[in-house]
Each structure stands twice: as C-alpha cells, then as structure tokens.
Picture 1 (spheres, one colour):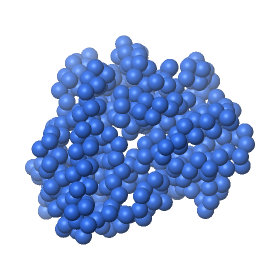
Picture 2 (cartoon, rainbow, N blue to C red):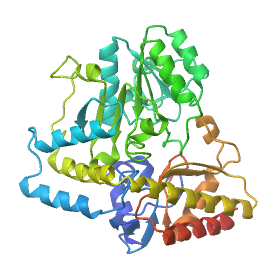
Picture 3 (tube, rainbow, N blue to C red):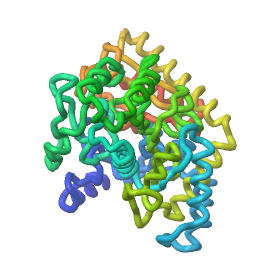
Picture 4 (cartoon, rainbow, N blue to C red):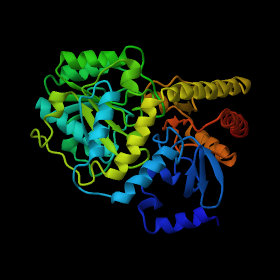
Length: 427
C-alpha cells in the first residue's frame, strides 16, 4: 500500500469521505486521491515521491506557478510581525487600492476569506440595496456552498428552484431562479414572470465549474441590458477568471461592467482570501457605512494580504504574463486538436487564454445540458491514463483546467504527448 493510500484510509476514519472538499476524493474518476507533500513551479510531489506536471494550480490561484519567489519572500517578511491582528493594517489599504486600479468596475472593495464568503456577501448586499429577495443564477455555475447557490434548475426555465443539497430549505430555494447559461430568452422570461422581485443576476462570465464554457457573442451585453432595464444588479463571479483572463478579469476582456464583482484565488497568492466590490453607492450600503451587515475576524489577514499583494503587483507590472499565457494556451490546444484529428476523434475543446477543458463529447458545449452529454466513465479512464504519464488533471470532467507561466515549451510538448497516448489507450 502506498503512503497516499495509507493516509486516505486513515483520513476516512477522521474526516467525512477522507477529504476536506468533495472533488478531492477522486470518486468521479476512480481510484484513491494522491496526498501532496510539496509543489514547485509546474510540479506537484506526492507523499510517495512521485512528480507530476499539474494543470489545476490549486484551482486557479497559482498563475505564476507554485512557490513563486516574490510571493514566498513577501510571506516570509510578513510572518515576522505576527500572523493576525484583528485590526486594520496598511496592507489592507494597499490591496484595496490595487484591486480598484486593476478591476474596471470596482470603486470600493471589502476583503473576506473565501470565494463562498464573497458571493454570499455580494448577494446579501444586492438584496439590501434593491429591497428585493429573488436572484437568477445559471445552471452549472458554481458560486460556493452558500444555501442560495445550491439550487438546481426545475423542469422549465420559469420553474422555481429545488434544493440540490439536504439542509437547504425550500424557502431559500423559492428565492433562487435558474436559467441555462447562454440563454438570454430564458432570463427575460424569468424577469417577466417575477417583475420587480429580482435583486440580482449572478454568473461566472466564463464558466469554470461545468468545465470551461464561454459566453456566446452578445450574451454578457444582453444580460447587462436586461439588468439595466429592470433595475437588477449584475454580479460577475470572477473568483476564477479575475486577474487570470486579463489584469482586470473577464470584465476587462469582454468590455462589460458588472455592478458587483466577487474575487478570490489569485488575490491571495494561494492563501485563503476572497473579496467583493463594485460601484461606490452600492458598497456604501455595507456596514459600518450602511445597514447591510458583514464581518470577519480574519478578513484582511496580514499574511494573506502580503501574499496577494506580491502576486497582484507582479501581474500589474508585467503585462507580458498574459501574452505568455495566451501563447502557451494556444500551443497546447493546437497540439490537442492535431492529436484528435490524427486519432479520428471529434471531442470538444473549449479554451480561452489560460483556461481550457477537453470534453468527452462530440457536441458543442455552451451550457450544462451540453456538458452532461460527456462520457464520464471514459473521462475517468482518461484521467488515470494521464496520471500514469505524469500529468495531474482536475479529477472531474466538470472543471476547467488552468495554465501557469511556469509551463515551458518542453512541458507543453510533454502534455500533448501524454494526451495523445492516453487517448490511444482509453478509446
């Protein structure tokens, strides 16, 4: 039995399912999870001494690779002054100033400790600002594990949501309306059927949690127009896309300004950090300026702020990072498509910048219904075949993969080779 297997057996007696976040359990791909000991650059090292080129990058934040020296140095300097104060610090001000400089729509920002906390707070703020209770989310978009977001679509786009997890009340579900991603008409019907009741529309502008799914031309602008017309707040969940698809996130890349933005991942440089921000008059509703309550003992933690500042400053001062990531992403996807053609396969690849997903389906994927046509057992075999060749993927078909600047041309060639060999093995 390997060390990872021993640890997993022990963990299952101590932790629900043996893991502290469900996808880590490998249930969607078979086998047992690897327990990671360390990481550097593009590599993960497990407890058994195996090395993997990895394409998760801690689910997005390691855009510059693992243990990036300026971030490490910032953390080493910060820990000399204690780990937490529960009081304001200079670095919180500097972080807020930098986020506002980089993200087009943000005029004020509040730091929190996770993406889930950010989306929960942003939704509460939207309800407080508008005086309305309902929201629209999109099937397959994940906004953390807050009760309001754990809702699946009903049988029709105007059907009220039903809880997707025990413990979520029916009353909560009734305030959550769902529509297919990329379907403007469905959103319009929901708005018409719930006139003057909808506080917010929330979405991942580029979806990462049903795999990488791009907005169709006109979709984001259409949502902006519908929200403006009906006095609804538009919330972009940029926890994954923020500072990754561009310095200013997806909203910069697509030229659409939301009313509120949620952020995470990269702004912590790997530390557990989140934030939400937006128009000044909306954010001034947050306590202590306004009546919408939100607080956090560890919000603006000085160690997390130090890591995030080092990361954001580097990205802000080195725009060539994004050029490199575009080149790396295009080279990888071109190699994958060449292999698919050679093997006579017509699988779908969705890709934008440093995000991509290879879907095990011949159907174009523009929403969750399309994504669910994937051959999941085949993906599980593909995952294991890639792992055997030293490539560590997200253990789920329904996740975007993330590239980092630590990947060299040699790494990309190795990934392309492994992908082709893995597909040969499993088809």
